[in-house]
Amino acid sequence: MRSDNGEKAALLLSELTWSEVAGYLERDQRLIVPIGTCEQHGKHLPLGTDSYFAERLAVDLSAEFDVLVAPTLPYGVNVDTEQAYAGTSSLRRKTLHRALNDLLAAWEEHGFEEFILITTHFHDPHLDAVTTVVAEHARVRIVDVHSVNIGSFLDRQTGPEHAGEAETSIMLYLQPELVRRDQIEDYSLDPEKLRRYLRGRMPKPPPGCQGAIGYPSAASAEKGEKIYHHILERIRTKVFAPAEV
Image (tube, rainbow, N blue to C red; front, side):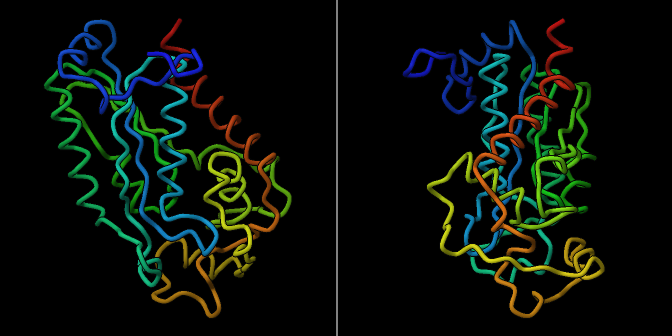
């Protein structure tokens, strides 16, 4: 496929007919599966932030390596605290795990032999649901974006945040029109409370918190571009490039 500007475009499962998918399987048996969330990201970022990020990675990798991309799964497992914010929709760990197992089993029956699951959401039960997915015979590879060290690109963020400097920078690069810049607010938590929040052990949002935790005011599109391409390069070399040798 080619994009409107003549560049090579992503190969999307949702846009193909069944016979075109069968033709693809004759030359390649890999499928990229982006996994997002529907989760609040403060007053300045959309609920689909994780989904936008995972899907963009999948699309760019597809365009480069000509690998088929499944529709993005837009729901994940969120911390209970997030449910206090309107619109947040969470699956249970077992539900996400079963849904992914069912999807991979269906695709495996058609001849797919390798699944590359990309997740951009940091929460232990979510990661547990994704990383324990299995197929009967096919290879399942997990790309956890948060395992990539991006500290050298950040000025104020020194550890995990939510809708902070890193995520806001990435969205300023990928989807700047969706960032409500006038709603950006910094909010810091001490390390112990932050651990409790990220692990879902804080039943209610901390006082005054509007959803974002960290320093989104330090974000920039320039940082987001560097972070995004650093992560993309790591996935490219660790997961895709070896298969091309």
